[in-house]
Length: 403
Image 1 (cartoon, rainbow, N blue to C red):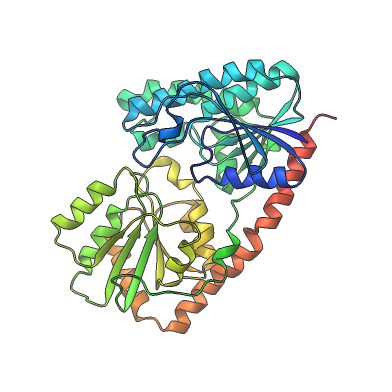
Image 2 (cartoon, rainbow, N blue to C red):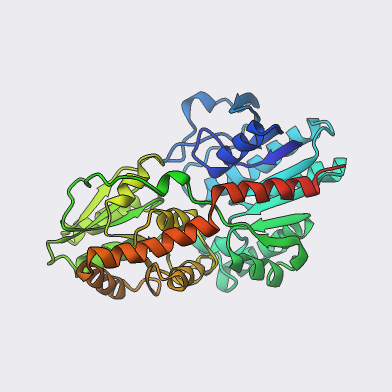
């Protein structure tokens, strides 16, 4: 197949779509990606991509057309400018492409508007579009304070109309969480026969990794790894640590970076906490060792509308690591942990409840913790298998490809 991929986020940043495109190319498909310019963790363009003109590259056998969209920087204005500049620049490249593709794949992280160039190409040449939906709009705008009420209601309603138009135009939508199906059908009016669930897979390296010692570790170590942003509500972990600060055997380890990292560190310092250790972001290859060294892994969400629907890739990796999982959040993620029996869950923001569950976990025997972790690992093997993921994805692409 000749596959056109639209993904504003791409290599050299670390996104799953990079591996997916590499896999498709390795297995005999001709893959072209239209993407934006990469940014560092502070939102600045990487030095070699500061020129605004379109750049043509190749990586892992994938042809890359990189458009000169705006840098991400920080703040809502710059983020919006980046989103819309990508649509504008990608549309220009779409107009130059020949009718040489069998199917279009949209990698839908934020924003949903990045699917607009795919629609433009499909309308021009009669291709069909498969969307892999990992972030539902307009619900995810709640992370930016945009709600269907109050002063932001007109903005929400504008993007609800836009999102409905885009989602309904897709020929097929695969979602990462079962709850996305009900949202897209009920809120965005997408026909149910267009929708199906394809969860993100667990990386194979998480299933069997030895456990090195954590830096500044104690008898019981609780680990959070990933983005430290508003939606992740890492502050709840710090508050739970404050509840347990008189227990010298319990420590908290936070790996990662993000827009809220500075404020979370400042908050931990203001509480005078010695039981919270902040570590730099580590590579995917290093994460299994970090997970293996933990008594339990922490997953937190803020009280935002869209987090009720989210089943993050991090949860699939947590489960594959075979460690108990403690969730402070509402919705799909906490429901799954309780269903599988691989950990405990408390409501979003309930730092007292989280501290209590951590205290209980520290009193469990090694065998009890292993039993909890093994339930998650077995579920991950059955449900989040990498091989099955690619079989499903290729089958879906072929079913939409032009004859």
